[in-house]
Image (cartoon, rainbow, N blue to C red; front, side, top):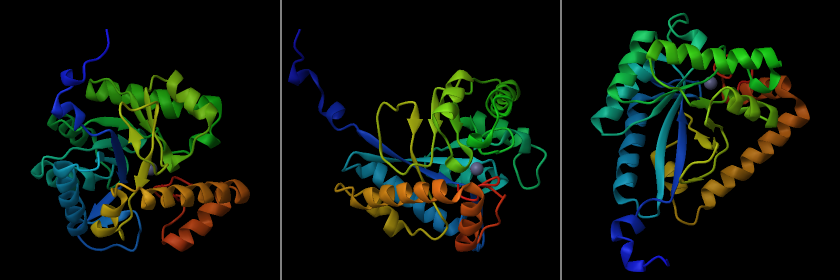
Length: 268
Ligand SMILES: [Zn+2]
């Protein structure tokens, strides 16, 4: 039977068609020289922009928030600011660091986040770049981390964020084999709804002003397309130079210690 146009409500036709996922790491109450740390006041201005964008939603591109690594500022600073604005975010956790690494969340904080309604996903066991892992190491990074999160949080874990954003076909196959249905990458691109098996994200640095971020949501999509081109060039450079040399150069340019956050990869 042909679909009758009048059966589609006005509300349905106005539903957003695409999402742009944004990736945050750590918040601090003061400015930091590290590019993955965002100052709390600037983060609040980002959140105010997202509230406005989600309300007006004029262009059908909707901001969605994610955090990688499990830094304790996610719980102490970001979660209350998100809640106060009616926003949510998905928190991806490096499981071995939970309750063991200084300045990272413990299980009590993760349970509290989950009970508040924030979804939790995995970000590997040790944050090792998955493209560098043997088959056994992939099992640890993907299955051990998922099972531990499920055991400790008593919930099903089906999303995985790739450390350093690194992946290839073997890694994606291993993610699916380990029980993940969605894999979050660092490819800056808008995603159509419903989401597919991989979800691109834009990595947010502490120098990005809300005025610039707002341009990503312009209907012409030019700023986002330019970022996509830059990302592909960066990936080509990584292939050419190798991960280690690339990470060293990246750390110099971005004022970040290799081996922190990126877990040996530097970026993301
Ligand atoms: Zn990470």
